[in-house]
Length: 125
Image (cartoon, rainbow, N blue to C red):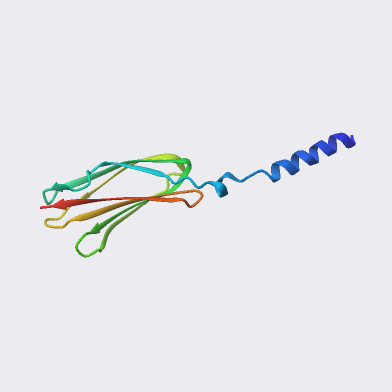
């Protein structure tokens, strides 16, 4: 009986001392923007589809899409998604205005607070 409790105690001790992977996770999420292309020029009044594949070795907790007016730096659109999964297929869109160039920034944050960011620009004529 003492042997049983000793083994049980050591097992509990071992499990409680095991590493917490989320604390040790230093791997950044990966973002692949599929569309639009960086530097793409579109006519005003066009719907721009933003698509991207976002992955993490563990779990994505937040995805942010920020769309800025390049000339003023003003944040025009702020989209937040909470996938709580190791991968996410981003699919968002916005309607452009004439003669405004846009900066599109996608930010991915995993459960260990590792953050990755990708930025592209779109010109409107």
